[in-house]
Length: 130
Image (tube, rainbow, N blue to C red; front, top):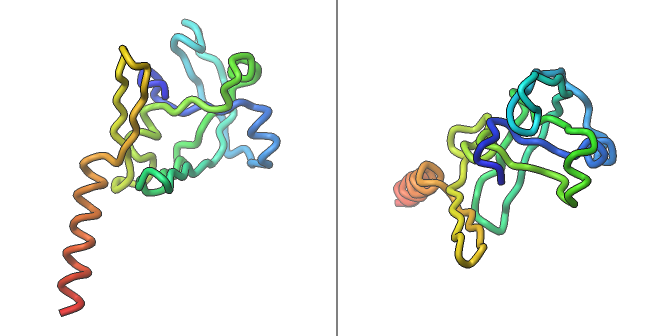
């Protein structure tokens, strides 16, 4: 998880291995990209977290970026940016991320928006069954 990154990034080798098709390019700048913008390819990605109760997070419209080399050197294949945490293209998706520094534990759970939507769906389902 990279809360400072506006977009999610995936290792270019992992993207090739998954056979994802490029959907365009975008200019990225920042700490990882440095002060000058760099052009990276975009790929349609949907993130799934079934064990966490978070709906699928589609990053199809904005795409996720592939970064050559830099991620694999750390043993990481993906950095989840704010696009993933906010739910990507689905306003009813999203996650709450908290980090406990002393224990080094990262907690990911459904966001309030997701929980509210789930509660609303349960109320509608209960009303239909009567």
